[in-house]
Image (cartoon, rainbow, N blue to C red; front, top):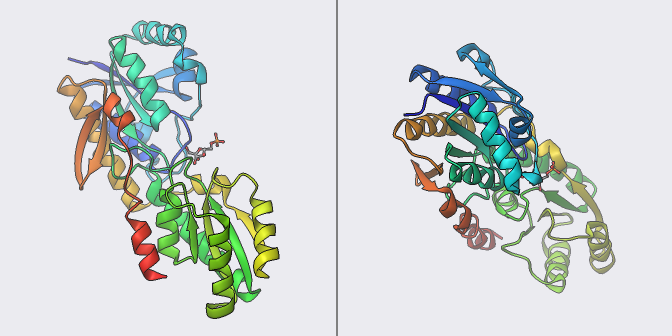
Length: 320
Ligand code: F6P
């Protein structure tokens, strides 16, 4: 039976991480567990940046973006020497379980520690929605709403000046932010890893829009898809006649108060993480599938293929 549980956030921060931290710490305390905050992810674990906390530690954080535990990316954590150091630190605090909140890199670290005998549960929190074992990750909905607000604003100026705006959104190698964001904003074209037509097709579509339908166009592009966006825009300018501008939304997409949906998801997943530890489970990632809170072993969560945004491609082309 676990007695002392550490909590950390790792990787890119996501709105709703604080709501998840709050849920885990409060659910742990109410169940008689001693709870420990680990700052700066696996880096803070190795540096022994750890304190025991009570329920007031997480007061007034539910509505705050970012993570009060701070975050970091520690590539070296793949090395066993770093993992053994982490185990040694955890043992010195008599911490026998961990809840790790983040994306796939966070799960990999959790899996390594579980193999060394620590009880670890993962909670999916990343704006990218790229964890296949959960239909949605904490932070995705808030980020999507930020994208929708930004694209709506860009539409105002794009149409006023009769331009073509190429808008880059995040998502790492997953296109969900572009596909969902583009659907929600009714943009003219979405380019993502799941739908990446040749340049000739892009030009033809934009020419068609310019000549037949509208005098402006909005194109949403997933990050990392087109290495030279300015070059891409310049080709569109030359071949379609559209005055074309590039807008990179960048890290503003990661900020802001979490949406109601992300807060509720964080509460449900946080409570489930503690339930699993109390049942004696380890090496699992919690998630939401068909609106049911569930869990999968880390190995499975890390190898499953994400499909959720793909069906939107048909919806998008039907509505064009
Ligand atoms: O994983 C979240 C994310 O925002 C990705 O969308 C993006 O590719 C990456 O993190 C950027 O990370 P950083 O802020 O460390 O450069």
